[in-house]
Image 1 (cartoon, rainbow, N blue to C red):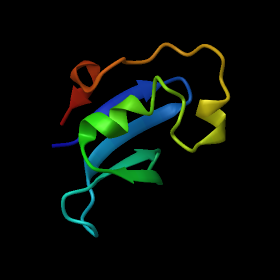
Image 2 (image 1 turned 120 degrees about the horizontal axis):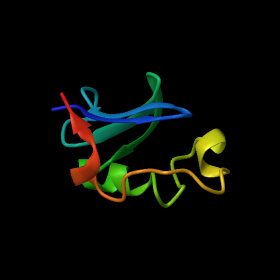
Image 3 (image 1 turned 90 degrees about the horizontal axis):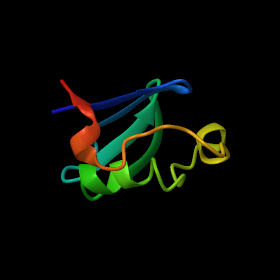
Length: 74
C-alpha cells in the first residue's frame, strides 16, 4: 500500500522500502527523505516538521494530516 499526502509544497508518499524489508520510505516528489519502522512513524514527521526536508520543516503554517488515517491510499 502507498500512502499519499498532496501539499502545496509537493506530494509526499510513504511506501515499503524495497531495499530494507520491514521499513517504510518517506519521499517527496520521488526524493527519499528517510526510512521509518512503520508508516505511522513516517506520517508523524509531517505535522512535527521533522522530515529532514528544509522546505517543509521550515514552514510556519502548513495544513497537513495529523495522522496516517488522514492520508490518501493507492
